[in-house]
Image (cartoon, rainbow, N blue to C red):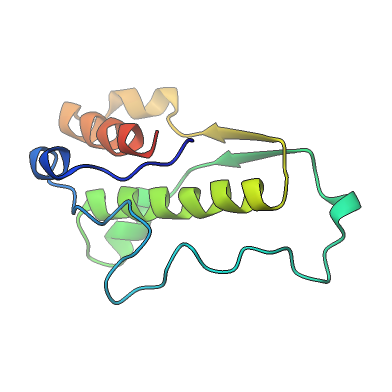
Length: 122
């Protein structure tokens, strides 16, 4: 399976909240919500391949006055939901563009943070 929860040691080591990439977030909604296909969507018209470009996580955090890592965590939670929807709706191929060549020009801490969060998702 693609999605895993981060363990306690990794969460402490990477300063990522233990539940941040899990299914339940206190005060939030469960990622295990009903993922059945809405009636207005036709299964036979669903795409076989979906591509996602993950962009704007840093801007999202900055606009809310949050640490940049919170933007990346929010992006990963959104990605996790997309993965679950694709599995539930029988979309066979999901391509994720998660890290562009421009990202490598950022600080080592920023690159490491994004990489660490991504590794916990895988």
